[in-house]
Length: 399
Image (tube, rainbow, N blue to C red; front, side):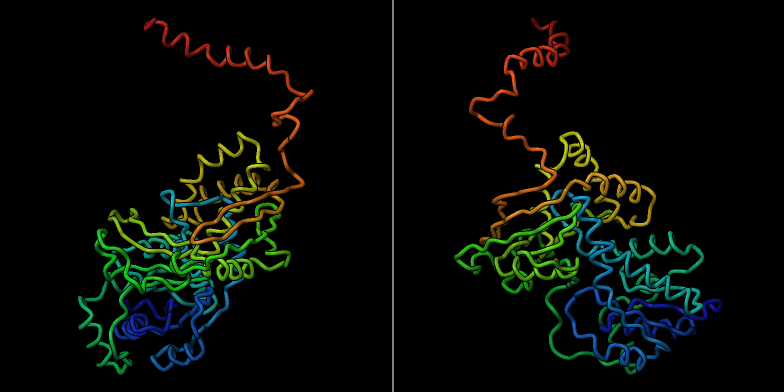
């Protein structure tokens, strides 16, 4: 431990990371620098640097990473159509590689020998932080206090805080463990630990319950360029601006709530409730636009690769060569996905109404049910005959 003279800690300003900050000083006898990342979690971060220094940090970084998060992490993932286990839009997963990247960059700038995080030994986040650090700076040590210290309970943590003069908030504990950023808000714990229980009445924040959503639908137009949303209702916006605007619209109509039991990378099942209003709208709209822009075989091939890409994000392999290779394919496939989609938001649903594109592959002359001059229906007989050759041979013993 004596070799560690300086550590960069991912610091939220809450009780747990404040305790970790002090514990690092006590256990390692080292200097601690903190990083607090604004990823659009809509928390007041004023004073968090002063709080870190009051707890013993020698330097406190508070960084606005919202545009980098949206443009360099959320948008590439959306271009890949990434969904984990068919439902989860990866809101927590995609935030971790950015935070870890900044930890590494600050560690380099500050001459630190280690980075530290507050993830527990049961969750996925520890893997995401540490795989990113391994990929970007394998020489740096990663300290995970929850796996090292001998504190076993909330009472132990409280006692440590009191001993070292760290303020312990009064009142009742939060009913849920929550993680929020620009893309989503997650709920775990409380009654959710039993999959048989319905989420409680307070288990929502970004999205109103569908039954409380407006009785009138709202029509929203989203413009895309090469798979990226660039405008909402005709107003051009940055990536972060698009996500925030659609969060507001989707949340108002109860769009984007998900209750699921997922398989964690570490081997256990976990139940969570997720709110991803803007991401849900973007996923549905872009997917609809692909219907007229993408070649059939490109679309089908892309869809076979989505589960692997989603695993890369969920498992923490953002900086792995396979994710980067998959990204190159996804981006190439999305080069044609330019156009506009109109969607209807209503009582928790997103319904595409229309789609247009200068790159449309849709040919009304071919698709029409009316008389046409470009398609000879008799040609289909030979096509079907050829397609059936192997089937005829495979089943001939049953005739």
